[in-house]
Image 1 (cartoon, helix red, strand yellow):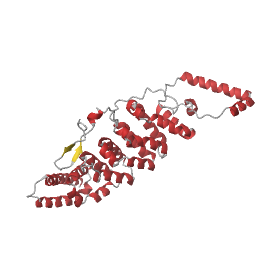
Image 2: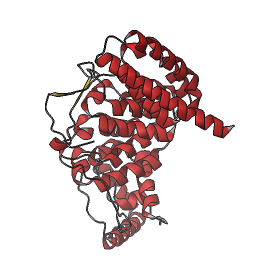
Image 3: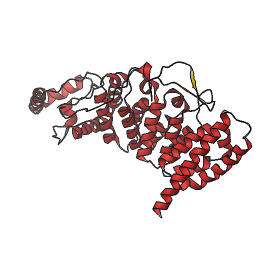
Image 4: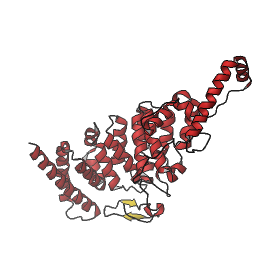
Length: 366
């Protein structure tokens, strides 16, 4: 996408459709996460729900171990005193220590240690689980500690895969579906958007439904760049879930701007990723209706581009039928030049090119 100003004005197209200018200038250059190095992390970098994150010092670990041994000896020596003390002190709901969660284990890597840590909080300290995620998945972390947030999301995905954990879903879907994250003018991090989308797919059926709900028309109108990032994850992961087929088909064939225009690049990307899904070709075929083509030839220019990019040769028969009818309509418009006829002519050219390329592919396959 090019650097253009963000104003409530529209860039006119020959098709009489329109698209809003990009908000790249308003945001400034979006920094990418490059060469992020987590190999030197010697401590957990997550925040607890009740205290800031400080480097863990092993001296403190030894002191805790020594203190625990002293308490154990005291309990053995004076059981009645200890029981009386336990009854006198009310139970606290403080965040557990690192030693309590890790249980003195040694891990082959920091990643495995962090996965065990999150599972331990989730399974044995469930009251602390919502606060832990809320403390780590924030707009401030997104903008100022993006590397740490990316690592946290990846660890969370490994720890909670297949669990459909509602707390994890709620916090992750904020990244993919809340404009304060994906349309933040102070910074955009596609790696974090894609990581959150991938983890939502891994969490389970409810996670997939939550991600599909982010592919709405408000997102389409608000920020197509982040929407394309989410759709690319769905296309690459190829989840066998009809909820994604329906959502991508809606982006490709239904969504528009308030003025009735479309975003051609986003439409083409939606079609390409739709065709990567198990039932995507069937869904696209059901939408290739000549009435829809004649109603909005500009949209179907982008649709044909998406089909060509996906190289879905099984749709060649449908494309040939559409091309024949578009040619016939062009003949009737010979004496009525204008933007609509130009759109139809452009569409016919794209159809002819795509059909020719698909025909070559079929010949090579035979």
